[in-house]
Amino acid sequence: MSDYDPNNIFARILRGELPAHKVYEDERAVALLDIMPRAPGHTLILPKAPARNLLDVDPEDLAHVAKVTQKIAKAAMRAFKADGITLQQFNESAGGQVVFHLHVHIVPRHNGVAMKPPASEMEKPEILAKNAETLRAALAQL
Image (cartoon, rainbow, N blue to C red; front, top):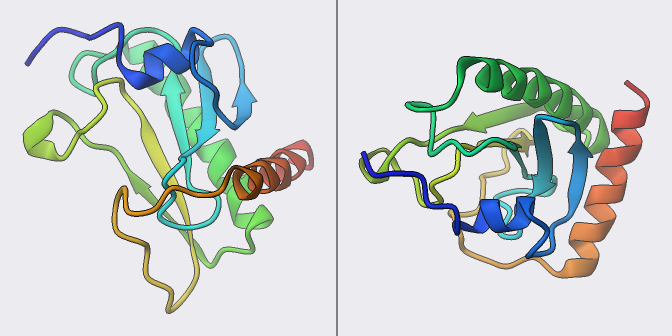
């Protein structure tokens, strides 16, 4: 396993160097929309502390990410009128990880609708902004 790269795209977003459609943030975690969503509302949950993946994250940060993941998943079910949720989390290249900062994917799902292939299509910024607003509104109702 390699060391944590402080210049990965999520670290840069966390430092405010790159824009993101944030839907939730607290002292330990942030949730933001995936810019190449596999379905509307596809959200990523990240710890703020540097962690390459599940194999090196502080257990307290991992527990907090799990709590935030559950909260966002409940809101996503409501916001996108989903029939279910797919959770994904990848570790190291052989495990499918592409960005080496721990993150959990929350993908709202509808019966009979397949997810788009990974990293297949960049979503329009105005659609991401609308989806972020929809998800934030659902979070406020929890």
